[in-house]
Picture 1 (tube, rainbow, N blue to C red):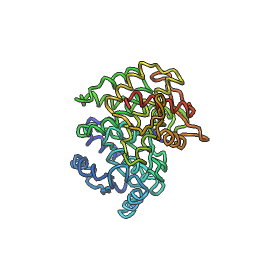
Picture 2: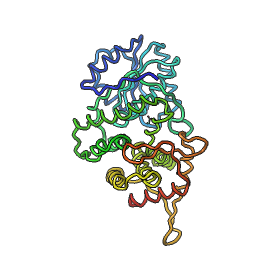
Picture 3: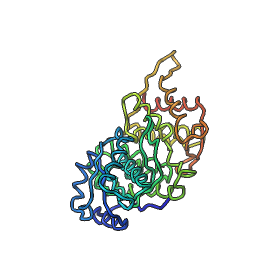
Picture 4: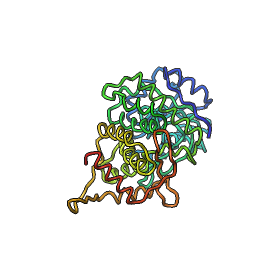
Length: 363
Ligand code: GLY
């Protein structure tokens, strides 16, 4: 996989003009969703290099991350004369950069593309590292390809208008990067004033967070080894996310990851000795800022509770695409930055972890 260029922009206009110049092309396309078409594209109106671009707009949010939407992008490219030498710019959150990246990776066996992520989640995670794809058969990111963008341009000014939910959704991936990197980075994330953000400091932290991901992806672009570190919190997190979707109460990806981090830090404490005090700090941050996934529980007797959804969550974990031969695969930690790949846990231990989650989240 080619290394992609990730630029923390001082000024998007110049960075985008430079990125476009580095990709010689015959035709230029820009993909947005309904929201970024209205709110973000006008901010690029002065960029000369974009004047020739053909706009393609798709529906917003994860429900549109489908084969039908993908086909509509292929169709638009085809009808508007795209060739193998055309260039696509994806302007949007993770849905747009994932789907647009996959459209680019597959159209005429692959055309070049540039990502301009507009949400925190897309800046620190989705748009970086070359994973592209769509949802299929009710499963998230089931179909896709590794195909890095030529350039990823991070313009943190977009974050000033991000709502709190989308802010915290992206921040969960930053917490994950803190946990798998250094105590200093984790501490600065836990101490950040999220109510009254200092955007200059946030920009620095975004740069730091993306660097953690880039370093890992550079070592293992296709997730045969160390890239699995980026799955911390995601085995149980994806199960929460899929269950919430199936129960018609969808949650943002980062919320599910934050709850997954609570569970997987407890599992790390049980299985690999992750320090209790560190776990407590992260649990407290998540409880304060993310609320909790609620369970339907039955009380069988005074001492023993059971929750209907434990079995559903366990089933979803068994179907996680990171597993091999039906064995649930976890990334756990011995300590901050001390990563243990390819860990597993039996059903009883996973249920104990869910009990811990309910207790510490006050459910
Ligand atoms: N989102 C995890 C990864 O890019 O590997």
